Amino acid sequence: MYFLKKITRTTLFKITSLNSFSLVLKIGIGLITSKILALFVGPGGMALVGNFRNFLTSLENIATLGFQNGIVKYVAENERNRNELQKIIATVFITLLTIAGFLSIILYFFATLLNDKIFGSNYDYSFVFRILALALPWYAVSVFLLAVLNGLSQFKKVIWINIIGNAIGLLVSIIMIIYFQTLGALLAIVITPALLFFVTFYFINTEIKFLGCIRLYLFDFKIVKNLSSYSLMAFVSSVLAPIIFLAIRNRIIKKLGIEEAGFWETMTRISSYYLMFVSTILTVYFLPKLSAAKNNLETKAIFWRFYKSILPIFIVGLFFVYFLRFTIIQVLFTKEFLPVTDLFLWQLIGDIFKVASLILGYQFFAKKLTSAFIIAELFSLTVLYGLSLVFMEYFGIQGVLIAQAVDNFIYLLILSLYFRKTLF
Image (cartoon, rainbow, N blue to C red; front, side, top):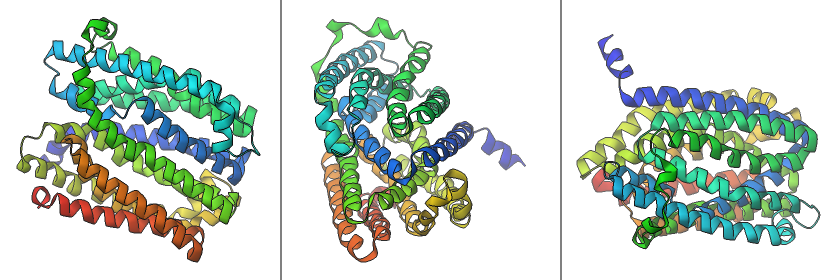
């Protein structure tokens, strides 16, 4: 009994509990949104939504220059140094707003060209790109503010922002999809993150006077230079990776048909629901801890805390997911999506390897191991793309899932070898 009380009083338990509530809510919202998508847009529309999500992920990370993890690190290190903290906030805000404004101009005037590249000339969703042009600056600043809160170790506020954002996303998605089908689904993806700015802005002002920090004379190019290494890392993982997934999906559409691409997108969507638990815990709790770790002994303790507490729970959860896969498909989607049940096994195997490697991958960001990270990621993406094309020829859509599992295993092996002194 004392042991249980001791556990429930820990910061990790409290954050995990609140985060679990947030994720249950998000998954519940995801169930509703997925059901609506399945009913109103079908597998073909799901594939188009997947293409747009991949494009948007790349664009968002270009707009924020991949600074998020760097912001968390430098804000955490300078939390008590108010002068330096103000310089960081002012410099990053001015930089991101300038970049986002430039990208918005490109989006607006090249909307038709982008539509043809992402959706193909048979579909006309250029209007979506023009709306995105207006929404992008708001979203970029929102991501920045969330990273500042994370760096200040305001874990609960970060999670509450996610909870409120999910609720807003549900409302916007229901309205837009019901009235505008696929177009509505695409617009909802664009509008929701921009609306989150107002929520994030409210929470940041409970910690610091944000607008009081924004002064042009505080701009320091040295801060941008220090953060640039994170841009290189983010470019590989958050810009190139979605482009690779976009290329694989387009290959599936060409080789196997748009419905098969929709089934793969559906499996990816389901995977993203349960991976949220781990990724959120890593971002809001483990990354700041790894950044603050002063030696290998402290880092090793953080690694093994993850492997002993989070990973076992995750694996047990995946067993339930596999045995309930038919129910999951019928609840989340429709009978039209039942072929997705054949994709679960390799997806779950790959996700176990992925989660096991995530904590090691975060060490790249925590300690600014830029070159090692870029080499590892480029190798992993090359393996994924190559194996996907080869295995697709022999195993169809299953081959893409097998390729992901093999790639995740190889990536885990490489990181375990690279961090062997810290890990063991």
